[in-house]
Image (cartoon, rainbow, N blue to C red; front, side, top):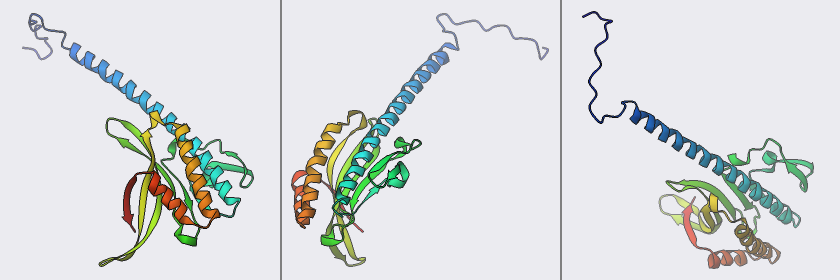
Length: 215
């Protein structure tokens, strides 16, 4: 038989679908799923950017408030990343090209040497829970003191307490601001009265403990 001669069409089995139909149907489902995932990712990126814009603004305002009383805090992201200043530190605006959605960790930490306050602070990060999307967790972390370990020597012990944790699609900014109101008021009072215990006792009595670690 000549190589280029077409073979006769195979007889079609009764009831058999178009052999391309299954793939066309699958391809349609895959395209639909791709669109759904991309839309969900876009929504999460937009939501994350919105949340970060609010938190960065809040943290910088708090940094300024404590700074007015010569209480030194450090913030992440740093002001060099997100802000342009007309007059440092109060007259500022966001840099037009700053990508809020790229920030996955934020923090506001106390750098006061007295009473072992260094490292006391709020930390925020995002994580992905399989099948449930992106979550935000906000904790307060502080040093509990030092402990001597037989094989590694003296280490500082840090404890974390959960202030807030939620899927970013359900974030309640008002609730976060209520948490800030009570926490910052107590934190500020503890500085004015030179009593770190006021802050630490408030955290222990108000929020669930997350974990402890040593470094």
